[in-house]
Amino acid sequence: MMDTISTRDDSDLLHARYGRETGPLPTNEIIDTLLAHRSCRAFRPDPLPDGVLETLIAAGQSAATSSNLQTWSVVAVEDAERREALFHIGDSQKQILESPLVLCFLADLSRIAAIADRIPKPREALDYLESFLVAAIDSSLAAQNVCVAAESMGYGTCYLGELRQYPEKLAALLDLPPMTMVTFGLCIGVPDETRPAFIKPRLPQSSVLHRETYKPAQALAPVGDYEVVLDEFNRMARNGQPLWGLRCASRVEKPDSLKGREHLAGALRRMGFPLK
Amino acid sequence: MMDTISTRDDSDLLHARYGRETGPLPTNEIIDTLLAHRSCRAFRPDPLPDGVLETLIAAGQSAATSSNLQTWSVVAVEDAERREALFHIGDSQKQILESPLVLCFLADLSRIAAIADRIPKPREALDYLESFLVAAIDSSLAAQNVCVAAESMGYGTCYLGELRQYPEKLAALLDLPPMTMVTFGLCIGVPDETRPAFIKPRLPQSSVLHRETYKPAQALAPVGDYEVVLDEFNRMARNGQPLWGLRCASRVEKPDSLKGREHLAGALRRMGFPLK
Image (cartoon, rainbow over all chains, first blue to last red; front, side, top):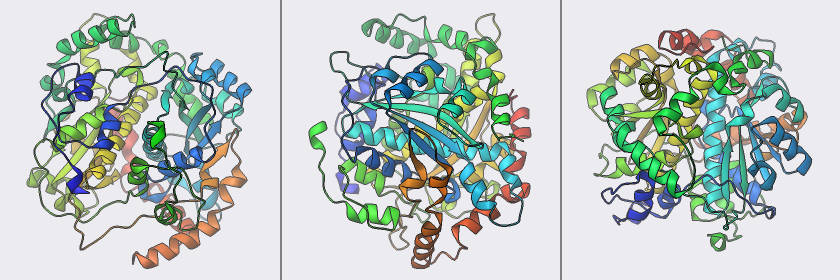
């Protein structure tokens, strides 16, 4: 596949991603699809055709998984009443009602726990934070493949971290067994082009990419410039928001800035994750 | 993009992924790239051409990030001595020495902590498990985009969860500030085709994909069949391994099955993540 690389100027996508001119970079059709990501919050009601969900899950299962333990699962919610319940569990974001499919990704240690229980030995390692983290990362890698696959087919996607606000209510709604937890949701559907989404600018690469060692001053230097870029974007997209630094600060100020998620550790312990 | 979908029979890729015949599914070139993933553990020493790393990071930054907080960073290690140190910190897997680039992905709350500290208010929410999890998930979504972008260019990739075994040693090696942690590494380079990697079969979809609610019996039913499939694969690939269930059981048996990672929670607390 090496010969498919072309050094062409994808200045539109890169310009949108950084809000500034960047040099030309080597790219290809797949990378262009990645660069073009935007969160979609306006969907048409059309259901996904037969087979598409199975394709998306095959893509998700193709992602790497730690030691092939496959410690993730997914509950696909299409039922309108159940989506309405999800809507009320989270921040009542309307894309949950609009999109025909909400995938609830699970960190799932229950499957290997049940498998391990077939032999008369303990399964103590599952009680550790590390095992929960393995499952959370597995679910994230799989979800991102699902997201890329869906967008490659022209669907819109939107992650829902808000589903972590009431993990036990959600477990009841989805009949989850102990040792499983919804890490996040992912709305998937046909974008409503009358309410388009835009590519959101990110921090300059110098803030995120460090070579050999981490340089805190390098991470912070471009923040002021980024705030200007993001403010311009928010005006264009008519998102009334404070400057990025102020918004970050208010998001992390108090425990209840987490809107219920400050109780996550306690809920997880009750759900079968001791987090030792 | 909807019209690029073709319902063709990608039976080779799907057959390899599940080790069994599957029905034809709608797919496209991008999804085929996802389905074709395999972990690469044998690299040629060729360095990546100029610009490729920047392309990969632009793809990573294009992934969704919770509330646009961008709580991840990456340290790109190319230096041979530093890669050798990584090799000794982890499980001494030779791909760390062979691949020209090891990306160390970070859950990074240090940047928004420093930004929040510019105003005279607390930043108490960062002390909670939820904030650590946001950062770990952000780093995972970004890494998977980097992985897909690299493979679309013909490079091989290999995740390194083993870098969580000694998080404080690794923080010293990479000059990491408090409130950052390496979630995993990712080796990237030109695959050595004389030592090829294979697509590893995963659990049948019925074990992983649940509709509307989770069914534990459905999750477990296909495990026996999967063990046969994976055993056939391991014989073909000359990986001598016990059956999948036994291997899972031994991986979760005792705290020290985690090979040091059972101390992760304590290390994280010392590194600025109270995990409340």
